[in-house]
Image: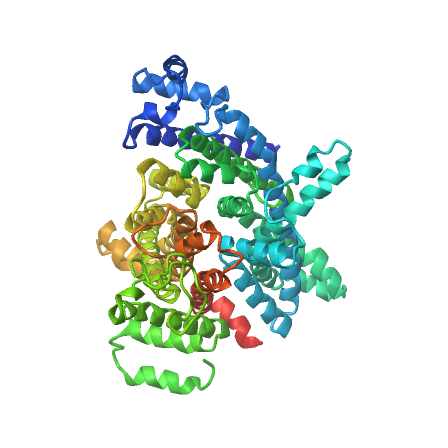
Length: 325
Length: 314
């Protein structure tokens, strides 16, 4: 019951935050220098079509009404038309969303699990060579410049050695071929995903490792660890059953805090690898002054961040029953 | 630090009034810092990069063709590899890569330190006010912080630059600062909350000190070391954001930055042919951010006796 109340509270909070973001974006798009009409309506449209779109977006109305139109359009999924693609923004970002989620979720989960696992080992071997090298390695990986690492990956593993494709998400020849089965298609996507995933993983696992290490070291000083030792439990049991689950809690929190950072990284990765996700679409839209697409993809990214935050909160509530809300 | 405690105590007692407590404290911190391997590596790297930034002023004086932005070698019209004339080669229109690299160090320091300073300034003041005032002010400020914290800074700045046109380097610095204070303010707020209950604040209140005086005279000196620590981490993130922005083509077009150099390699399709051009800027960004990060971690140990004791016991 407590937990359910807490989740509801967080949900309302996150909804309010999203509403504020929505409003700020509205104000920015209306108040920025230049004419909002030319910004939202494709200059290549015929006058009748343009008029229709202006009426639909409420651009001929006073500010207050425009805002209501804007909110209504948002909740009915009407973000206008992309200048570049000529189709609705909604259809574009909707088709990109799964691609981003696949890459993003896999990279976060993978780096969190590996980071927690390695952090556990490093803390257990504290002061030894293994620990020093792990800490240094994690620091070095964590501060690598992401787009550069992505380019290195493509250069070395894609171009020089040729193990993986240079960019993209699918090979058209496999997907166009009616004889190729589902497994072949999935393998093809995985083949394309290895390099972007490796890039994101290298950047992220280090911070989880360092966090898990210091959290473990704190936990090991707790009285219940002493109790476990006094009971004569095996060291392995103490490490894996008593210390690690508690030490992993701050790491879960930090996953939530670093989500925004990971999404920025995701956008960069998608751009360099031409991975057809929302982040790349946003960068593309901004570079080409495709304002409706930029607005739509930004809002969707905001929704992804906030939802992921909520998921982390819920997870935390279940993982740590001691917390009182 | 455990070398000979007796001399240290005697040193302090010799000076009757400890006229420079801050300097004393710094000295003490330095003795702890010196013991730290990560701190030493970080500081060495930083000194090297600082030298690079200083050296960036000289090449254009030798020959205008070594100017990072406008200097074009008249004999070269495409990217060439390292040679005696151009130690790291040239870019696609014949500009010297080494000179760009040196100028990039200057920009990175400038962006990193000024953005970090501003965000620390904001974060510290907001954190102290939220923690000290409590109630509505606290709730409002911390909600604002939460909201900014969930926003991906890079993408927000991207959207802004699409709306307001090409941003110049100082606008970028300002925007980074405006979006990077919440983390700091949370920490400072927590620290202020615990400081607020201490007797010396009570004493100040009793003697009739104003809120302004309590915050800036009594609380601030106690949270400043923590702010300074967070500044090193903010430098790292500011450098990364600026570089990423420049890499995507939204940097200030009038200055060379490492991110922009990488963008040139990428956009002109030299990624596979010109490792002499691809490698240096990336290595520099990564190492500079690493060195600030290491500095921060070593400082953490100086400031947090808990971390330090573990090392000493080992």
